[in-house]
Image (cartoon, rainbow, N blue to C red; front, side, top):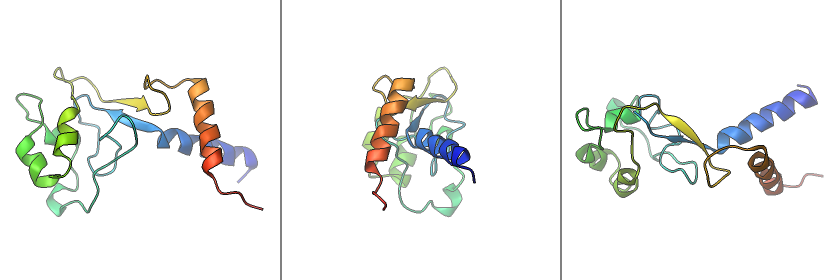
Length: 129
């Protein structure tokens, strides 16, 4: 791998690590692997996924009629996360899922916020000799 290619891959990994989903209709967000529980830090539900629920998307956690959280299902799957999840507001109109950049309070990526995220990431890396 060339030095330039490694740099591109590191940049991609940094970008992905600072992205979180903003829930629209929830159809494109995988419950167990995508970061969707917070717009402040990347987080997913923890623990093994029950076999019958392994392929859940966030839309499956919403009532089809009201587009609000199916609280009984949430209590079954994530009893410790119900309070956190119900604070998230999915789209009532079926809007598309989107992304938030966790490197800026506004949720919008800028070159400046990307630069500061890269500096922060560099400072967190162990020093090698």
